[in-house]
Image 1 (tube, rainbow, N blue to C red):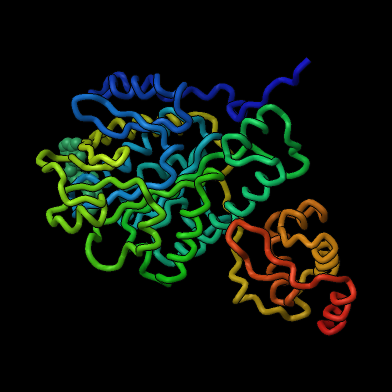
Image 2 (image 1 turned 30 degrees about the vertical axis):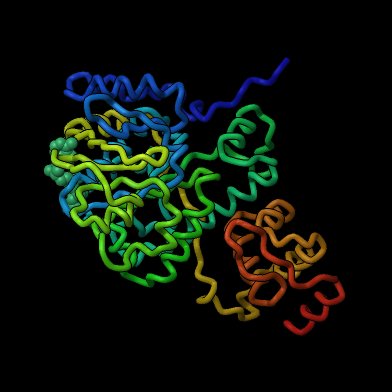
Length: 402
Ligand SMILES: Nc1ncnc2c1ncn2[C@@H]1O[C@H](COP(=O)(O)OP(=O)(O)OP(=O)(O)O)[C@@H](O)[C@H]1O
């Protein structure tokens, strides 16, 4: 007999999707259509509402850029994506990280911390990041989560999160080996310029890494910006976000910059935007969702069973700040070094599994091995290079370190 399939929904089997809340609102018909699209889409979202409703699958979009001058409807568009997912997905399936530098735009979702939000493990941090000094740590933690996910997918011989979760739900992956159901993580950034205030080049570097490799393992980024001119949007970031929503740009050169064409239809009505679809420029319109409807959804969800806390991102420790004094070195340093050199695999999850350590501790050991010159630096989602090839060489290094 085949084993019973696992479902993440079993975390809260009595969870009731907040569909009943929408009846009294004018947008209820559109939301019901969205709900019906659930069966054909991994991540159904309302994309546009003109004469007809356009529903898309966010899983196919990778990352998204929303650009336009102030007060043109960018935040409205972000809300329409968020509520689409809140309505159709279970708390086990998706998590959001909001960078909300306006401080109030997404505060309505604060209540959903234990259902739908992700944050740094450090208790002082808010689930919704509104201070620029938390940006880099949160991004780095997201990048670590991404690397960990890559290790899991590699171990499971899967090419993307969908294949991986299917395999996990079919009970083909062993939780004892660190395998777990992976929820989709969305980083929602409301104003890119504010995100780049502190340490712009480093933030750009980590962000590019997440944009480049995150979507395959279920980490997707939605960025909004009103900085049409200037160098806020680096060419690297722009080239990594193929899907773009463009509101009311008056200069032809701007249209070329964001839509790769100068000839675009005029946008007259409130909330209208342009986007590229199979090489053609199309017109769309935001689904102007009422705040009371968002509140009704969140209130309904909050009343239901939740997790003990938000989804915790891995701890990020800035290794440049960590002195490699002997007394600070992990007592398992030598054992870890031997495992890495013997296996010739510079992978955190190898340490984690072989030594039965938490991911954070294994990650710290890796950083210490790097500082000792045993492994090379982090290389995005790939394993680190092992610089020491033989146990004899290692022994010399370890003797020198003591
Ligand atoms: N489809 C629509 N129909 C009518 N009004 C809309 C529509 N979409 C957005 N609006 C209105 O446009 C105004 C600006 O929207 P929003 O706050 O989303 O803009 P924004 O681009 O995020 O602004 P900012 O950059 O200043 O934060 C709001 O009052 C909103 O209600």
